[in-house]
Length: 590
Image 1: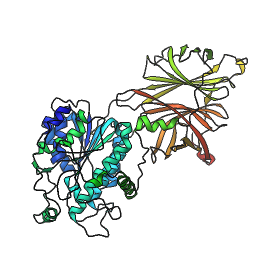
Image 2: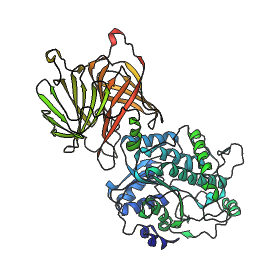
Image 3: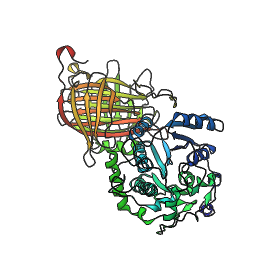
Image 4: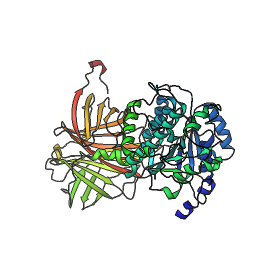
């Protein structure tokens, strides 16, 4: 592979770069894809069986692009979406849609851009080149981290013009300095490199990498069509571009396709590429090729990141991590430790219509008599045991013979009560990606509850009672602190027997909120089992609430990976009770 890379040169085409490489089952997002480098990059990926989400700014451009692509490629391989990188509100709308659809991406090509435009502000008050080229992609890509798969690559398109100017951290919007179209363009292209390198530094430990690519001079784009001959005089004074080779469109996209898709760059990042190879450091600003030293300044990149956060009024912390694997890992920091107290122990339970027998080995347990008419429940499971408090246990069961179900059991030897919660994954059919996002009123999970009485060691069976559905928690409001080292805090309000509201106060999902389906069972005044089925994210949860000690212990379970595999998420939190909602007697929710 290295030998092949050494054979690449300034006029290497994307056809040569992708020769013999299949992109089947890969999915990429390309901004600014209706013309030029973006459209050609999409065609390159589609030609090798990859899938592409292409963004354009208007319905007219969307229709024109669709008509061209549908004549060459299967419609199942691409979708075209509207996105205006000059509007933070539109970027947030777009990223929210992708998150709600659980989109998974193998890469993002930040291709959209404008060049050497007349002075103008975006709707958010940014100098438009800095706003579109840098800040738009800064927000877009950071908000899409929840969609990135392990091994994903971010490619930011820069330019040899990045050598014209570094970023002015004091006045990036030219509010107090004379505007120069080429200085502004150079500033935005330097920002693209600095962002790519800082993003790579933050994400490389999770095998999400970022590159900066300068395509060279490609005339088959519309970047320069608005410029008059005299507009190039300033550029000629600052930089000698006559020695920069002019490329065909196929050669112009070769480097970005190489960075995005070529196996040579798997597990690599923080690299500036041009002419299908590694760029060399070149401090002579008069020359049009090479990487200028100022974009290699890590500390400056951190300052630009902080400035960008302040400008867009949104924080993307350095501790950000991949959504399903890491953000939910934060839920386990305050979880109680595992226990072996029931190891080599047999327990017998009585339900309303059967007897359930369990025997706990070291890592597995056997279950006899636990049945459901619609679900096949294996008799052997892997288990994890947590002692919530003295004589109160949470048992997590995973079945290797049926990965579409999981079970959780709360066992209280003090009250001799137990509750079996069987969770079943039953997704609806795959939605039409081109249709509007439907209002989702039911999750992909069903939970079946089996109240039981503990018979083992119970000398008062005739007086024992089953756990029961309760309304005790309706109206209560609390904070759940899952992690203190990296604060992960959720607010819950239990609004009625079927729904609760959540608000992410701190953590990876900070700012998110919504309502999910909920169920409540009561053991005694301090012990409850609360479960919920999420609507927008493919997850279910089961928790034991110990209100005396202000803890919750449980798990999440869901289909959040790129390989359609169910993932188990241990979780536990400290409870901070806030208040309860007081309703007039005639308006008490049920």
